[in-house]
Image 1 (cartoon, rainbow, N blue to C red):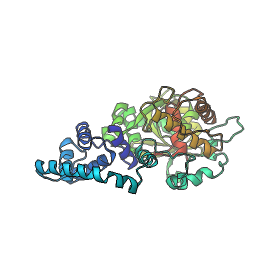
Image 2: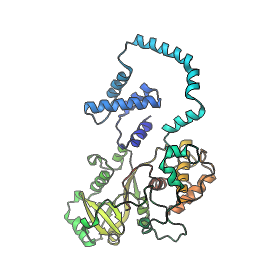
Image 3: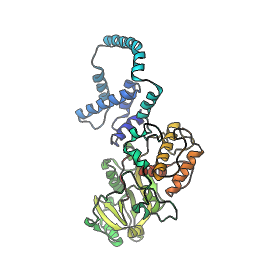
Image 4: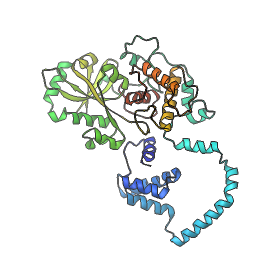
Length: 392
């Protein structure tokens, strides 16, 4: 129940957990887990929290919302109404089944509408209707190598890197000419002149939280961001791997002489990095940044609605189906070989081959499971969920 509510909130653009544990339990009891009732009850509870000026929904607000939906009717009348409704349901069920088409296909559509795997199913007849412009996007030929990403990858491969996302080229969010340009010596001088509390790891993590629209005052460490549906990942695979993940990252800078400090690597625009310190953006040549960089980066990422990560041969059917649909969609965009059967909840040899092709395409380690890196790159390629980006 908690995961379903979190999923619905994320689809609405909210990364925070707005319901307390007791509230979630009460929603489940009141709705008995019926998704439509859950949606209505959550909607009414959120309105109640807004009316009370609360930033989270607690159990009492859920109870009040349930009473509003039910109405303050005496229990004996509720029992009578229940018996009457039951009799009418028995009498009208055959008519309803015929009229509204309660067939297996309809039930399947309803389930898919609320399932965690919201990626469209390639090959179904209603694909164009459900995916809209996404279907035409898949049908277009793969673009040539993206110049922004190609600068970060000097790989000796025949195939070009896949384009970054659905919308083509990104417009840089900052005007580099309006930023102070720092060289390596300038950056070290700035770090030494800034108070240590402002160049600490926690301070840089709060800058990262702000990029994710997370309240900075609530961020002290990695477990703290879990409340907002985020996870931490420390990347030590070098500049190529950090660029591939395409997320802003907390980085440590130092020249071995002065004391090092942490800043936020916010953007990479061409060959210029944009670093954020105390809310101020600074430009720096990429090569000079890499001279100071300590070769690790801490980034946030949001997992898809999966039961567990990694996705492998021990995963449940829903997780395997999610991975099959996502990898198949990415392969179709790239113009590569796709699955012969997408809707097959098996972690079989065909899926493993598709996974290996995806990993090789994006310079990832070839392995028989989809871990954090694979899921992050899939999100970047499919853009099924909005996130702050690094590459421009």
